[in-house]
Image 1 (tube, rainbow, N blue to C red):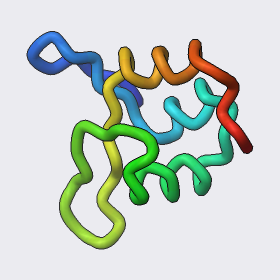
Image 2: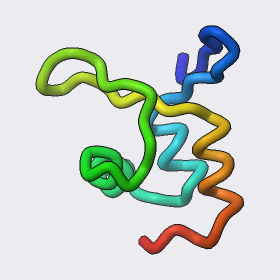
Image 3: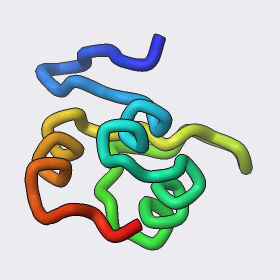
Length: 68
């Protein structure tokens, strides 16, 4: 499942966020790692998933188009 709700925050996966922003997944992950796209958390381990706040992703999607 790509989405869940935790303490009033709807958590979405990186693949959902990338699709909503119209970005390739690798680009989204790179920008998240660089701090350009806000994340809620990164799960443990070298390949741990990034988790995103749906509201923050929706806000970015409504803002200026994201440079691809």
